[in-house]
Image (cartoon, rainbow, N blue to C red; front, side):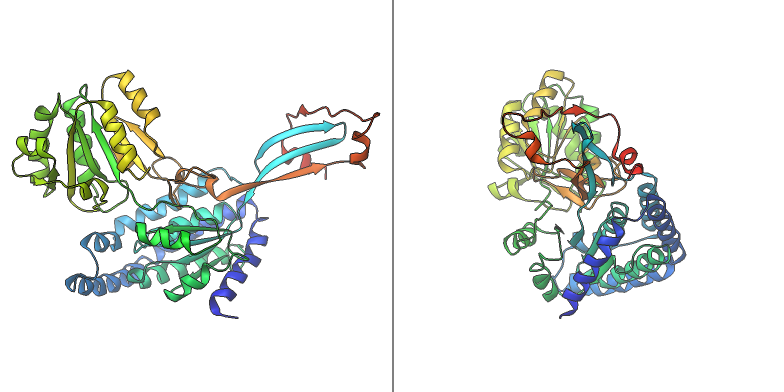
Length: 443
């Protein structure tokens, strides 16, 4: 048996136990993990510094991008944010054991649909070391075991986080083996074949990488290929709001999937809006690529090509297009977008409603930065990723996205034969107000 199979099998055994761990034990473990990260901050930052030194050499050779290097960096402030995130997950309601449906089929025959963990999550992610504690915390709270594979550029940082989380959680009563880490790229191919052990894969990386995962496994895959986000500045937009939002969505942190990549501007407002926006972007070092109408207003802008409308830059680059109607903007987004996050800036409520309902994305926003599309900001504690699919979970995936359900049927000698034939007993199908926890106490 290979090491990957052994780790996946161990995670499966742990998952069966973790599903029955109480909320109190899980919350205690999360708080202990948060404290342990603070206590281990020097060793974590030292490991990250080693990763950064190695990555800078790769950057000089052109083997990685500056955006990847940006995502790789940890700091004391980032560690504090990670700790805050873990503690916020501990404060959330437990998603396991919720009664989703309760009905009396007949007297003494009661049916309950109850939320439960998915089982074992396989998480394969890019060189962002903060992803490991995010995913691990959500999996622990939702009662799932997890097998993690991070980007090789963050290997030392991931190992440091893994050691802290494993040690702190298991000492708090979480089943041994619930969290596993694999490192070699070749191990990913083997992991994709382990549908007997892994219940769900969550890949986070490039479009090509996610598609590779989807095409080479029988395991269900949850995630998004890229974040090609748009902002449409409507004819009835407040100029000051639009400038503030478009600046934040691009400049605040350009190397992430919820940063804006394309801005669409209504022709009636284009000149009044684009001139000050061009100045703001120029001062921030943003490269503008525009269509012909944009370049007439901003002569310094580079010519945008068809490829730009399909590109996730993850950098200080923005493509801009002038449109003549809200419908043209909607059609552009639904044609070129990645169904991640798109926003409209307008004071017209009719236009807002049309945009919100017509744009086919997992998050659609009104007068707000696309950077809000995030599990922590949505109040989910954290996120394992953002799903642009429409089955099971959509948008930022938090605790509820890591649960499924099962049915409990409680009877007292009931048999189907009594409900068939000319003398069949009728079903009552009466909704029950009691929850599963109340029924469970009687068992």
